[in-house]
Image 1 (cartoon, helix red, strand yellow):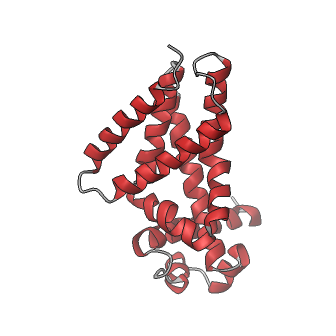
Image 2 (image 1 turned 30 degrees about the vertical axis):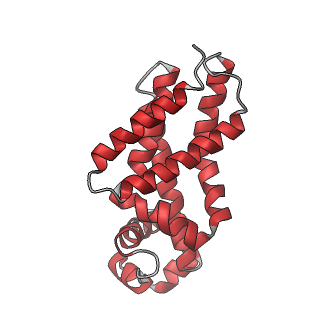
Image 3 (image 1 turned 30 degrees about the horizontal axis):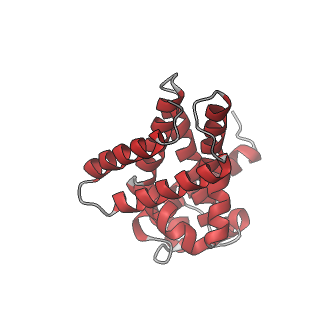
Length: 196
């Protein structure tokens, strides 16, 4: 069966993104060489420039794929419960757990903001993780689970707390223990917004 040009293009992009993700996560943006990436992918530099424009464009695409993957993880974990509070806690925990994974943390938390700039990074974060969080909080408020609180403000508060928690956990020697500590602290904090 003949492979279409569109399918070849998608396969080329997917292969390059996967290889670039490995290089960016292990070496960091500054030290990851595009020559090595295209060589490993069996492509030319021209293919990289054609699909992504430059190294920053490739990094942006990798970051976006990481954020989409994390958003999917959050949704999957949240859906494991029917209880809105458990959904919220499961989602928060899934975000932090995914953010500190070796394949994600440097790309998402360290190089993302510094390479793309704070505003561009925040916009991408809002389009993925924060959008899910805000939708969950809005739904909970409408169902009477949340005390009267501005949802947008609470979304930013929780998102910032989780990003900071992920940075903290990523540098701790016992990440599993630190994740449990974060989960306990997050649960207690969220209890303050719960309608009793």
